[in-house]
Length: 164
Image (cartoon, rainbow, N blue to C red):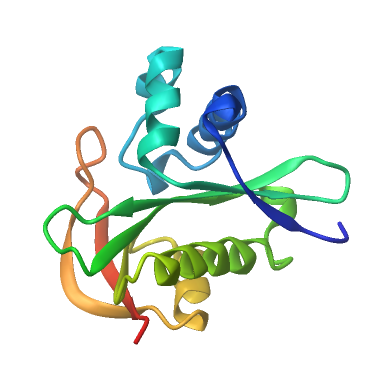
């Protein structure tokens, strides 16, 4: 895999988002609060609404194959904070800089929105993701919890990056 470019999806890209999200949920079901079944049942209008509400960035390899996904969600309670959500990199593209490029796109987007703090939740067992987030400067906040049903047995913790 050579060059990676990161693109922001538009509402016309809902089928692309759907395919990537379903792939991510099949590949790493214990990394996300949503389930494959929930996502597979979502109507096209739901995917389009997600693209309206959640700025969505996709990593594309030099063969024009989508190999990663990340989304940005405003924090409804704290106007100076936002969430990095839905982070996923295809298994064949891991450890090649894809995750870092996706995080950089979200950081750039957050800064353009005037956000002071970027937050994320990560499963405690996801050591690869935790290491990536730590390399990018995300530090544990001390907040922790469990994933929603049916994965309430999975513990996760919050990390934050101060954008200054």
